[in-house]
Image (cartoon, rainbow, N blue to C red; front, side, top):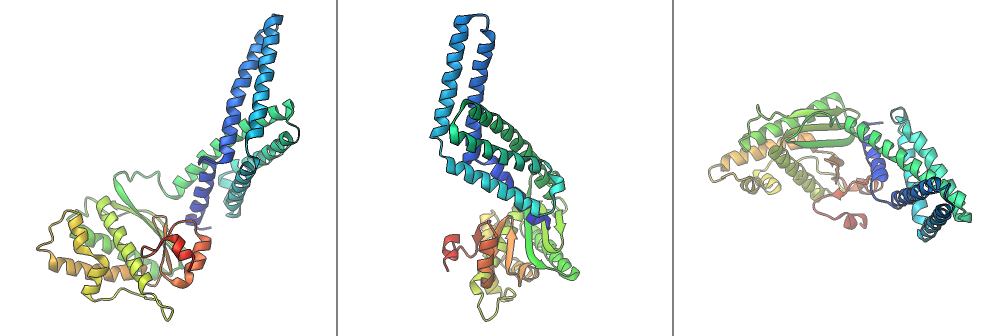
Length: 351
């Protein structure tokens, strides 16, 4: 499996293990109950030789068990079971990726979830002291495995994204193209990427020797390119790519998709809005009209090489739709926001 898809699966799984949901809230509450019961048990052990204290500690323990029983009855069951199902489904998605050798703790986690479900069902049937104590024990064990698994998954995600490399202070650009590519296609896109970065460095007066474009990840098959560069340049770069995607989307027709940006300077200026972007970056453009026009032409040619003819592009985790016929498939397959020419996802999904 392409590591881009694997990383997305693991991000979903990590969120299921770390973001607030009914299951995590429930087992956190149960852990708090256990702390109160431990205190009562210790008091009981310390008062064995004193009948008065012994009776008092027994009553205290029984009262706390009753409090736990009442609290469990008050908690809605369905959201908890839904959360366990969702978590198991996310684990199964990872297992299907055939990369299970990296995260063996997930096998244990899945079994612990199944055990928790069984114990919880037993509690719901009789609410006995024994079943409640078993639920507390199972919840604590599950919580520990969730924490261990979440940390292991985080490490794998960082490794897949090469996040262990120090790119502090630099901007990130991640591009994922679904199509399969020949070697010459990959070279064409890589060269275009570099040329656009170089042109923007020149346009914004940033030293490329001080801030070269650095490779973080390149993966073949479905092409994934991840690079880092000077923050202001990368932000400008992202804006140009998104503007180009929006242009392609607006001008796509069912008779034939737009394969490239036009070569007319007036159209390129309307697509890129370079002058306004430069002013926004604090650059005086009064004497730069010829430079801006030349840059617009250079950027247009290389953006054509980089993204022209694509149907869907993932840019820094956001899915940009270009070809209308791919619309429904992208909505079904992706969970990332669908952004195209400013159309809200809810509006697109209804067409």
